[in-house]
Length: 132
Image (cartoon, rainbow, N blue to C red):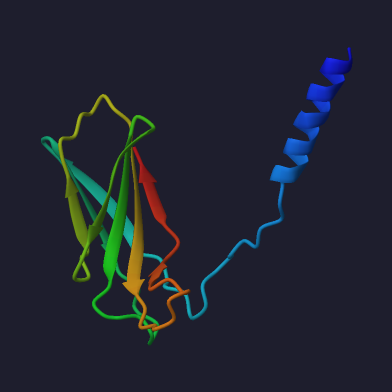
């Protein structure tokens, strides 16, 4: 009985000690990048082509041209994350299998001119997702 209480007490102490209130960064300083718009897809044979419009205004502190981050999921599993540079407006994914479920998330991504080693040099827009 004593031994059981001892183990329970140790577990409670470990549980309470591991819970800390961390500061969560909700946003990065500076003007956010707007998300991509007008995202569409087309399927041809074994390829899926995504198209979108880039944000019309890019914050001044973002290095141009911006990049685009594309996250791909197939049947609920991560199938890769791709960064496409030079302000792309399309991406082609293959091989496409019509018997599977696909989910693509596209985000605008830009480098920020900063010399502060404690600040990220990367700013990413909210994602636009399409699933089929």
